[in-house]
Length: 132
Image (cartoon, rainbow, N blue to C red):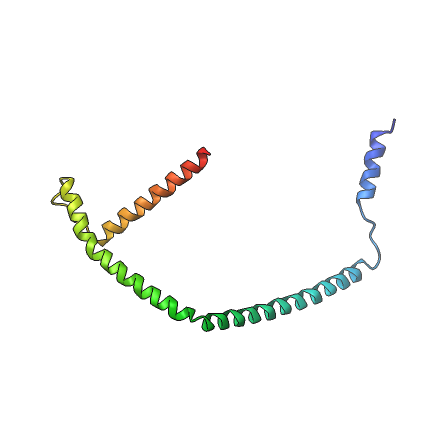
């Protein structure tokens, strides 16, 4: 049976690397090699990123994507304006049905109600995911 103190001392001695006389020079050379590699990698990644960006811009221009996005934005703005024109009448009708004739809502109230509705939906989704 081995002596536990001897085993501990032996483990401690093997865990410590011996100090060499040229350890500072060795560390500097290793760092220099690593820095050269990183410089090359950074340059290569940057060059490939610029090349990929140019290809992406060329594809977007070729597919008329910018014009499609602008026309979709205009269509969504007109739909949002149409919905906004309907919203006050709908809110007034709902308030009258609830017996709250004197209450008025502005745009802030509508956005607050929509935000609270979205929050309730997110909480409901989170709760249902916890159940499974």
